[in-house]
Amino acid sequence: MKVACIGLGWWSDVLADAIKRSGKMTIAACYSRSEDKRQKFAAKYGGRAARSYEEILADRSIEAIINTTPNSAHLETTIAAAKAGKHVFLDKPIANTVADARGLTEACRKAKVVLALGYQRRRESHFRWVKQHLGQFGKLVNAEANISRDRLGKIDLSSWRYTAEGMPGGVMLQIGIHYSDVLEYLLGPVKAVTGQFARLVLPGDNPDVASLILEHEGGALSTLNASYASASEYYLMNIYGKERSAYYDMHGGLRILKRGETKANGVACAENDTIVEELEEFMRACRGDGEPEMDGEKSTASLAVILAGIKSAREGRRVTVAEMLA
Image (cartoon, rainbow, N blue to C red):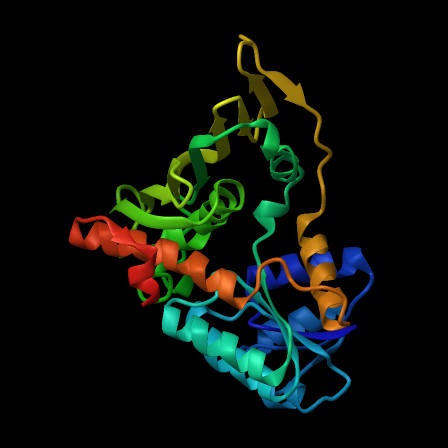
């Protein structure tokens, strides 16, 4: 399948590398407003450096757009692709507002093109294992998660990724949303959120530390901490059930503790290529074989969880997801 990449920041290279690993897609063209970026990208990954986005949309041989433009550009670029009959793989979050998210989702629905969102963390083999064995956990009661990275000295304040306007909610919208998604994947939809945000270490106008308390529709409570101000990269996800608990962290892998036992036992989970998997799922959906796991509607709901946390922190109250979707 021939695709074109637009919005050529560092994540576009991550997806392009995955496309190369897959071998099932070809990068036929690329576009960025920066001529230097598009020339370098074309030299690295092949395909032509298009002179405009319109040139790509007019090319009938290109079936899909791999869209890593800034969040605020998702609506315009995705609607244009849909009108041109191009399928769209869009990096998360779907947008900065529910209105934009709904607008681009509806445009793709009307044009009958596939819209898929990049939420690769839920695909990691340890989370898939937990999901497949949830029936053994009994009633799920609680979970705790942490997703942290060290961005000290690495912040580019000219980048939309690190400004309150370009990435409202800062670290929680940029990386925390991955683990709010995993928590929903494992514990079910979130109905309400209480949040706190702070800027403690990094320069700029955006939170570098954030915490959410999530109330799931099934009754379970979970906590999510996200940080750009930590000493190192770290990922943790613990799921507590009445009969079993799962403990995952990036250094120790996955362990399971059963009721009545005193020692958690490790579970061997082979590392999988999550980004290749989501891109190939997207390609199959474009061919009429199945649906993307994360589509526009699910990704809009995912966005609403984070927006509820932002509103909660700002107003000092519990905020329902329904309020954000109203």
